[in-house]
Length: 195
Image 1: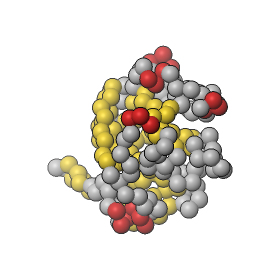
Image 2 (image 1 turned 60 degrees about the vertical axis):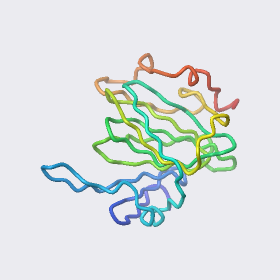
Image 3 (image 1 turned 90 degrees about the horizontal axis):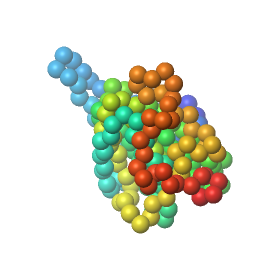
Image 4 (image 1 turned 30 degrees about the vertical axis):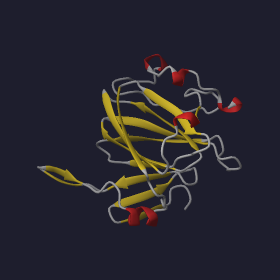
């Protein structure tokens, strides 16, 4: 697949992004006046769409508007991630850290929300982070390796070397860096150039 190519399998449409292996997944939901139903993962369809990994851990977090988590990666135990949002909305970002990749140091991002049901697949070898755009957000993700707390790496979220274009949060007309909420750990990550 090349950027923009799509494969539909079952209730899922897989779209290749500008970075090889990073895939946007659109999920078909079936709704009526009672609510909706959707499949959120079905291995045969994901394999057909180019995502053939064995997920071993599911995680979920809750965050308020302005929280930015990232940019994180595992150094010796990299993880593929399939991420989605079940409440609110976030801007999700993947940064290519694969040495020798033609897109090394480039990023891809998309808005994930409870309304669009979109998922974002990030293969091994990427830094990952997200910014909460709504008042609150619940963020869920599958990983293909367990978390190793002593194997953490990170990059500056606002590193000029990466040039990530973070969007405005809901209610704002432009991105406002003064509203970003970081953990203490996430204030100390190095630049991509010196990692």
